[in-house]
Amino acid sequence: MIYNRMFSATIAAGVISSFGVWAHSQTATAEWLNPVSGNWTDATKWSTAPTYPNSNLYDVVLGAEGQDYVVQLGTDTVLHSLTIDSPSATLKQTSRTLTVQNVFTLDGGVYLSEGGHLANTAVSINNGEFRSRFNASLTNVTFQDSLSGTIRGLFTVYDGLELDSSILHLGTGGGFKFELQGTTNTLSGTGQIVFDSESGSLQAEGSSTSSMIIGEGIQIRTGLGNGSISATSNLIKSYFQKLWTAAPG
Image (cartoon, rainbow, N blue to C red; front, side, top):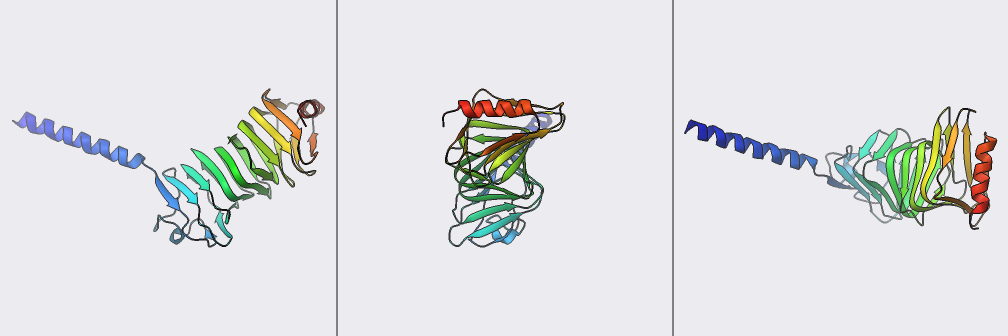
């Protein structure tokens, strides 16, 4: 009889423990409530008040529509997913690192990086602008199923940039600078980079011991503008030029 009680208690504890793990692993949706500007860390602006989304247990949505508004993010943040689907919304990352473990979806509005760093993230741009200002940077970022978004401003790329069935349109000042400081940097996957502005650019900068690898599935071509290509290495520059002129215009 004592054995049975102990066995029952063990099973019950196991069920409780398993349920606890299951509950903890679920994500919560955090929505910006109203079309008003504010700081990311202001919990009163979120549906999750009294807390703001600050871990990978949150699926964040900036979807409030109305007057234009800006949500300012200046802290290191890891999220499960992030969706901007309001034409009224701008997410302005002013510093630190943002990581989205699932997908960062831009269906409207603007992502504006002013010195911010986006890392280890898949980005899907279906509408809206992906914009850089003041030394914005990317590390290990994949553009996934991005067909109609526009890149404005120059993003510095570390540790590779991948296109996954994507077409990136480089608008005014839009482009990527691949940093090559004694390392290998890559532009890989399948897709196109299209110059839609005369001020669009692709750049590669680094030492003589650096290398740039561009995958066979990448096309670089002109669209509404010619853009420009520059590199500190003549070999890299000629490789860029070969891809550009070989691609359909």
